[in-house]
Image (cartoon, rainbow, N blue to C red):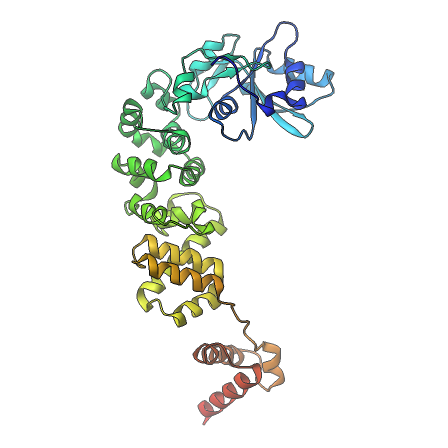
Length: 406
């Protein structure tokens, strides 16, 4: 295969306009990386990246002359973003690495397509295509891509030492695009150099882990990471891929089971929030799911227990908690799991009928007494299977408070 077949993104007016801007005075531009890889594999193309021989200041000048918005997003590293018809198109000048020190290498701009390809991570990401769909494959990555074989470019250890994030990217790409056995040399290099992950920020690790957990072959990658000691290194010693296996073994997965944050909490437990950089909402989701799973372990899985959890936390959180309990083997049979999920998703959570304003009107003063009265009322309501009216609750609470005074 030497040409892309029917690529809507390539034929779009915005992308062809970008080529018009870039390909002047003998300069050459080609789409590159994930744009080409995903097209070849029949995957969705979300972003368009273009490599070109023009220098960054030349790209900016040409865009201005053409009336095209250009943003110098990473101009020191050769990257300019063109915005055409509201579509961002990232343009990067051909580069060679002079020094590599993690995320941002010291680069030299050039015109050599092979050297530009050699600085990339995997052979399937070193494929280029011109505006007419003609493929350029300087490193022989086309067969790897079509066969979904993930392979480092050149010396795997050298590529990893350039940026240790490539260890995690290796497993994410295998989970997303891989097929068959993982590349043995690449895997061995990742395991051998795994201690280099300590040089990475929590933000970068978190992003890769969550993307891996949402990938089609997440379980296979996690198992390999666990066998190589990588999973425990980044998610803590309690992390187990078998927990994700229990989740993915289900025939009919609830929609929430697809959430990478839920999978993360189930695999690694609530302490993972201390190891990664999660948002407050993500931390809370993991912690609440773990608390609900623990409540199911300690207090059983009766309908009354489930109702109490639903009233306290809501449907989504309880579904997360039930699935977390399943991953941790607290809920053991699939029949029990389905029954719990069905109840959690179908029971209509009642609103607590009594308000502070009603209590004031009923003669209960604001302050500690009202707080105590509210707790009593909520307990009475729960004991009555959430059936009591506001008036009934208020009267019972007043009687209990009066008895305490006596």
